[in-house]
Picture 1 (spheres, rainbow, N blue to C red):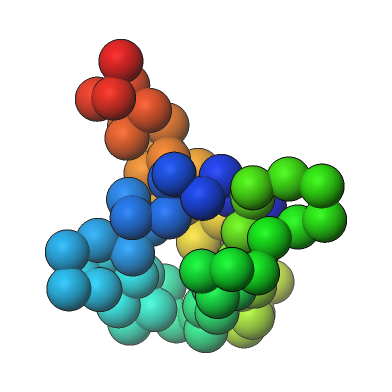
Picture 2: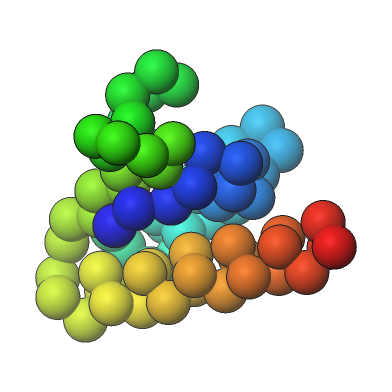
Length: 75
């Protein structure tokens, strides 16, 4: 999935807390592209989620919620 670079902090969380919790609770593996690795023509970074299909879908929804919550706070 693509995530704006400015929102990556909300996905990772302080000290990796959010992403580590997602990995352990939902049971997925999550890889985020490097700081200078953007989707071509954007400033979006790539988040790759692997695991059972249902778990990946849950993780995607939770990440989308984190991004939306962070966007509301920034306003």
